[in-house]
View 1 (cartoon, one colour):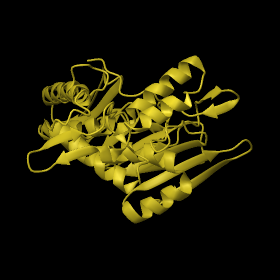
View 2 (cartoon, one colour):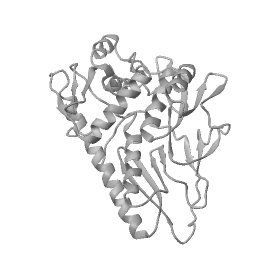
View 3 (cartoon, helix red, strand yellow):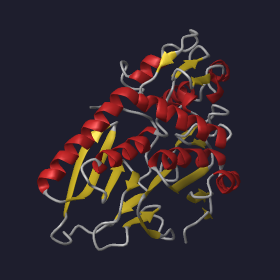
Length: 333
């Protein structure tokens, strides 16, 4: 199922270096990759037999397809796209369990990050997609107009009847900063239904890790990618890792460099060169905070993560004309 959740460049900042050998007679290492949600989902698992692994793979990829049909802003008939069409009508719309879960998670992260993460950023994101293609800045009057349709407080979730209302006309929800991590979490849950705990899910660079491979302390993940040898290689399990930023790619308009990441609070593409890698308990949180910390910058991110997310680690690279600086927050090292 094809679908494109976002137009930002996905920084390839995570290198899986786990071994590929079969360990012991009780488990077999299996791997499979399929295209979903506009990227490649790679699943590595250890199963008792190839037959169990095959059934688990098929169920996992079917789960991703189902999530895409619900959460995609690219598919016009998805549940999310249909919800956006009700914006400003006064209608309260019933939600599937999946969409409700991701909207609740998004709302909390928006509050925690003071709006640096915001799934209502869709109208701004569309403007900057055009700006990038035409190499021409969005008109100020368009930004002012679209500002009326952006803001996480314009999403009203009703807990009693499990419905939601989008209160402002023109709202367009974009789950690009959270959907892949959420899907990877759901894949790990699906694999567990087949008795598979030792697994890794790589959703185009957003990685969710289960229990360690047999006879290993964890999955070895290189933080930051090949071009940043000063960043650590960590041995991790039962957590998630996600990276966002524009260190490797950006675009220039009228002599100024802009990021593919848009600040939801201002509607302006970021101009600071930054890349953030987040290690969190789950992919949903890691994915969203990777984007949010790029918007916040290293110092504001430090304050928020230490206060709101003490169990989250961050490795934030900032780049100037002459130097690159690494900030570690709540570091595991």
